[in-house]
Amino acid sequence: MSSGRLAIVGAGVVGLAHAWAAARRGWRVSVFERDAQAVGASVRNFGLGLVLGQPAGEMLELARRSRRLWLELLPALGTWYQAEGSLTVARNAAEWALLQSFHALKGSEYTTQLRTAAQVADRSLNGIGALWSPQEIAFEAREVIPAFARWLAERYGVEFHVGTQVHAIELPRIETSRGRFATDRAIVCSGSDFQTLYPAAFAPLALQRCALQMLRLANPGPRYGQALLTGLSCLHYPSFAGVDGIDALRRRVQQDTPALLEHGIHLIVQQLGERGELVVGDSHRYGGSVVPFQDEQVDELLLALAGDLLGQPLRVLQRWQGVYASGPRPFEVLSPAPGVQAVAITAGVGMSIAPALAERVIAA
Image (cartoon, rainbow, N blue to C red; front, side):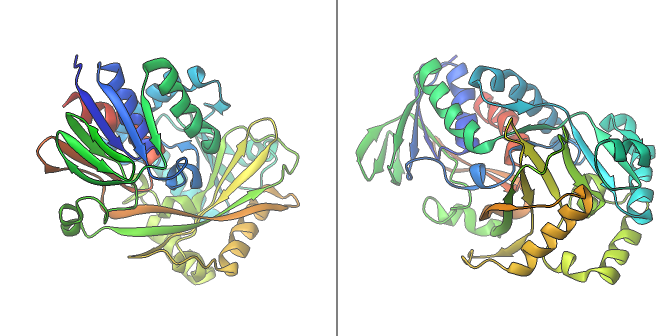
């Protein structure tokens, strides 16, 4: 156990997870956040810990350990969450064949079960079958992230310096927009900003930014329980790579609705809390910069997919743009200077692996 001082740059889920892991091991932790609160991927994307989509090996192990950590943390935060898993619904024969192939090949490893068309209809959904996974945890990210920060301050005495830009780290000091602070070690968790601190260390990684289009919809009436996906998600998540039927599904989508592949669209529908509102997404657009302009065709495609799945009238409450760092590997842990580490999750899976990855980084 340490009694040293640790500075963490960034108060998103990655930074908070590292603060939690470090505080549990006795570090005196200070978190520096340039905005008044986290406004990046942690609150813009889904509040979903996804196990099913992670490939076997290290990523699956991180997701499973993170699930256990979330189930330890979320009750302490007092915010809404549900651990009812996910339901990936097949909309056509190609998707259903792929889901059945996945279950036959990997069902024991991922603890999945198949659902019939009748069982799908009982959930007020349209589909010819589905794959159920018990592993997924859903929560309201906009509530969990600030609650996590408050809990760290109250439970462990973590100090938060918000509205504070870190300009440079020269241990045992860090230079910020609010002056100089002393620290023994530092961890940079700056999300999709890999240009402010240690850009030379990030440069060889060929990182980009991925922009998403997201929607929040009014409660359509039914209670869905599980997070909802469709067979389109199989084209996005690496756990389905190489499964018999994946190429046939991609060809069918390319023939029927090529815009879905062009915009990187697959469907997730997550129902939130007592209000029952839906978070719906998403699309994927990659580049060095994120332009602020939304494409209405993408929103129309997402709404059409959600409408076909739910069979309910849908009303949009909010539209926004998500963003995260993207790279050839799912995460990066760098040591750009003595006593300094930089941690970047580069595959849009921060909620799914951050707690376990942070635990590993701090333990090392």
